[in-house]
Length: 255
Image 1 (cartoon, rainbow, N blue to C red):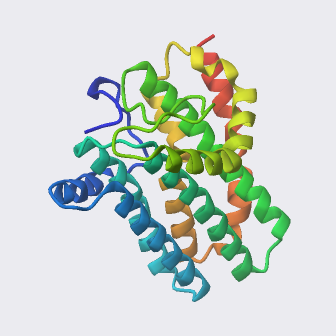
Image 2: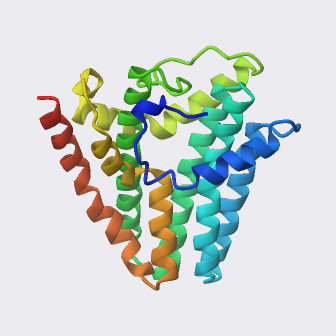
Image 3: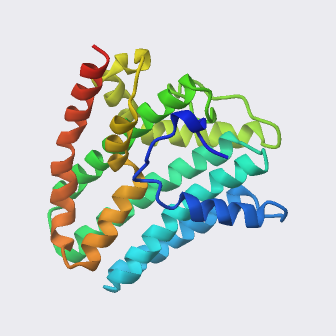
């Protein structure tokens, strides 16, 4: 199963773990494991990765961050294979991601004795990058009848799907809106006409996929393992300039 029909799929550089994720999902499709179980597993792996950073096990950190990305893809794959999509899983996944991202960057600040202010700016930039990528990707999925669990505009609590409780959806949507609302509003302000885009080329989506969380975690893991931990925070601050470059490109393509 895929988030997009075959003819509209592009090379997603942040989704390198998808083949293994599909293998995991297929292995679990006839078991009692649910997508939520896999989400909980990637949360656990993320915190173990943070513990490895604190103890300077950087190659182990890189491995665990890649594993976290694989499991992050596997929960959605299992939901599609079992035909059990849920807003609960979608929001739990996203809430877990942003909390882990903050803890990872704070941990890097701790081991490098860097600036907390710069770390928070890097976190803000990291989240804006991911939000722009998800914004374009969800627009593409909705336009071409792909996966529709995510909405272009997360306004109003969605109605619970079969097999989930409305109360859980309400709680998680509230947390999601609190944590992501500012990033969604900023990206929409910067490129509100993207929803009218007639064309989002594959090469363009591949380029923007460098903003995807899987690619971001891969960069963090490699920089730690290769001894460049002091440059992680400056990198994500500097790379945020591409937000404006990609938005300008999107507007040029659809002028």
